[in-house]
Amino acid sequence: MTFPDDLKYTAEHEWVRDPGETPGSVRVGITSFAQDALGDIVFVQLPEVGETVAAGAVIGELESTKSVSEVYAPLGGEVVARNEALDATPELVNTDPYGEGWLFEIRADEGGAADLLDADAYQAGLDT
Amino acid sequence: MSDEADQGTPLQTSPLHERHVALGAKLAPFGGWQMPLEYAGGGVVREHTAVREAVGLFDVSHLGTAEVRGPGAVAHLDGLLTNDLARIGPGQAQYTLLCDDETGGVVDDLIVYLHDAERAMLVPNAANSAEVLRRVRESAPEGVEVEDLHAARAVLAVQGPRAEDVLREVGLPVGHDYMSFVEADLDGASVVVCRTGYTGEVGYELVVDASSAVAVWDALVAAGAAYGLVACGLGARDTLRTEMGYPLHGQDISPDVTPVQARLGWAVGWDKPRFAGKDVLVAERAAKPSRLLRGLLAQVRAIPRPGMQVTTTDGTPVGTVTSGTFSPTLKQGVALALLDRAVGLDDEVLVDVRGRGQSFVVTKPPFVVTDVRA
Image (tube, rainbow over all chains, first blue to last red; front, top):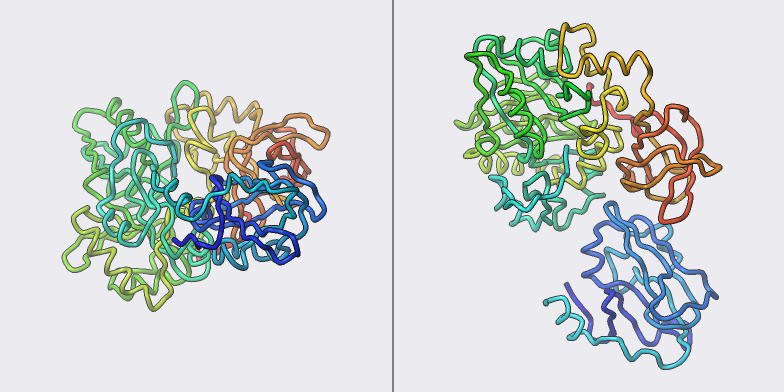
């Protein structure tokens, strides 16, 4: 399992890449630990583009054959992109969680990234 | 067929445990046993698809195994279990139920292997094995012995359209009738090869001594490589059996559910002079049960889960989901649910999926058509 150094992480097993592809945004996905724990992901439900979300709010769901997991907004702001490919190929979250399996992009309100962890701190949390 | 969680006692492990660990299995408690849920590099969908399209190998050693022997052994079982053992002969197996005599509720569903009038083997669910054997012993006539072989035997299932190719390749007998079995020898290991399974595909379950389990597993894995054989965990076994509408004890059937409600009347010998629960079940059948186990097929993108409430389209509660999953074959949510008898086939109902009423249609399983008897 890998946890790239250039990403930030949350305790909810999401990653944040700054910057995202949309100008002024960050990109969000789930970690390889999270996709492995969920198993085969078969449905992905994401927020709509244009939605305003609060940091920590539940804004989507990932369902696997065996369970369901909530998707949280790691930062408050406006959703500016969502990974439309996951509608038809949700398994991308399993096969390429840091690449093609990204979930959405948010343009953050302001700062707000204080609680994010670096790769070492995230991994330390998994080991305890 | 049962997934009751561990009750605090140490988990038992299969004689194939080391093989599972080596294959990177995710292990989970199942009926008091620690068993593979899925394997690394596999995953439920890939394992499920292998069984539908090629062949899968399952360790189901958590299933109980017991021998009942002695004068009148089979007559004793026939007076206790619901199905009619006169319907089968030596060398055949039968799906049957053990019901509570007072309530008619299902204590367990199990397979009986009939050797002769004085010898049969039982294959009950892991979590219920001890209770089944207790009830069989309690009422046994003088001279009938019940030997628990749960830890002494292993059970492997080879399931899928290429299952016969794999067995033939290792030198085991194939091609016998559905639900019949043959005793064979594989490099000195004695193997009972039964044409059965719980996936809906053509397949075999192999009962072997625990001491031969690893050798038989290895032989099957080696021979299976050419046929696309994939090691499969209990996660895939659950999605496969749910697609077929086969009930799981502890979810769809339980001591609180009768065979009449579960639409398992086909596994009851109604004309037999006696079986445990006969009086109450005959009465319930005549009066019509208040609820029935039905299939539900999602009309939207929603996955039903056990315990979710089912309502009519105007919100009146009509039952509960007992098993539910994503069907890897249909790519739709499918469920079994205990529903009020008034709900009919093809009716639209709503399943409460985390606060949202999602549309499902009442369907007669199986959800997926296979050729298990081919």
